[in-house]
Length: 294
Ligand SMILES: *[C@@H]1O[C@H](CO)[C@@H](O)[C@H](O)[C@H]1NC(C)=O
Ligand SMILES: *[C@@H]1O[C@H](CO)[C@@H](O)[C@H](O)[C@H]1NC(C)=O
Ligand SMILES: *[C@@H]1O[C@H](CO)[C@@H](O)[C@H](O)[C@H]1NC(C)=O
Image 1 (cartoon, protein in one colour):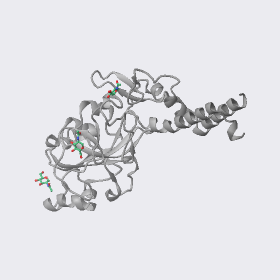
Image 2 (tube, rainbow, N blue to C red):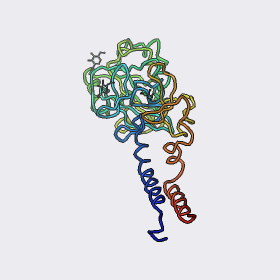
Image 3 (cartoon, protein in one colour):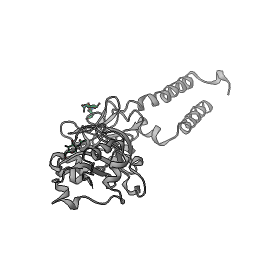
Image 4 (cartoon, rainbow, N blue to C red):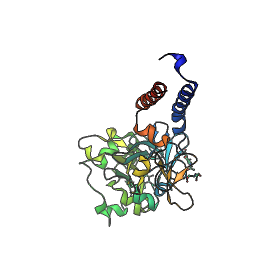
């Protein structure tokens, strides 16, 4: 193919196609919702901006310096989100652990949070330095369970942070291994224990000392089944109307739709489903045929 045989029309068309190809990546980054905070991906059902994600999870996340999970008792640093296992690990910077003792503190979630993103089954709360009048040592004794054979003495003995409980009284003040439900229904004041710590992946703690436990809270979330899949497949991001909380499929910064983005849109279809090289080849072929057939 000689250069002078390319008619101006074809050159113009090629130019247009090239421009179009360049424009695609630019347009797709104009999604109305931020899809990460630092290194943590933010996907449905979560959202950072109001109107992104599922309305049930509204106002829960905040990406100020890092990603934070907001509850009535504070802002907890999010360490990771696993979208396959539907879990999120958060860390309470004001919580006591084996290595640091911090002042009395409650862990409180909203009713909605308790329902849709509660602490996981394998997250154990350890109530420490309880008074002998504590309900969990008396009437609600059954709320405490055996954690793979670990004892209060072991915690008070092997953790620098907890040794102080032991030293002051020269005996071991009671402690209690319990689940989130206990904290949900009784505040630390009612529980009459001065501190708590929490550990996750508690199924693997047999024979593992408190120094090696993983401190933090693992939350397990449920994803509302609202037809987000069809929106995603059409290239959109699931969101909602901030006034009515009605579901929306956010297609670009300028277009919303109730269910899915317009079919045949180059932005939503071409890039997501067809590799760019494939796309280029077809375009070159069309341009070539155009020249050939003249
Ligand atoms: C689309 O929805 C988002 C989230 O509710 C909203 O912020 C935006 O203004 C809407 N855009 C249009 C064009 O309706
Ligand atoms: C965002 O997170 C920070 C934690 O650094 C917290 O202090 C702040 O109150 C949060 N803001 C909102 C709007 O939730
Ligand atoms: C442990 O609990 C007792 C009350 O039961 C309290 O007086 C004491 O200060 C607590 N210890 C620490 C280190 O907070």
